[in-house]
Length: 127
Image (cartoon, rainbow, N blue to C red):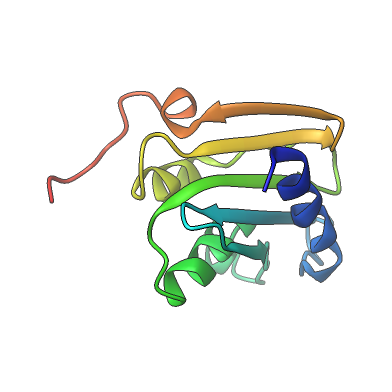
């Protein structure tokens, strides 16, 4: 799947987001190294700390299906281009430092970075 198609997949789930407090809907689509795609959305909570971001939601779907080798994650939002928050950057980095992060305002104007570019000197325990 190309970057544009993955971004469009992230856009396609935006309406499923639960964002009654911020009204900032986010959709994410994760591409595994074996070619599967998993989606996720942000789910807010009255206790803000219990909110989950779309990126982690999509990764959890992949992990729940036994897929731990990730290639890319596309992020779309209702408010224009959105990058992963700090917690999501660390969460993504757990599964590899070469994972591509695809963002943009629309499918024809994308930016692509590796997670290592977005989170230099990331924390990782030795496995």
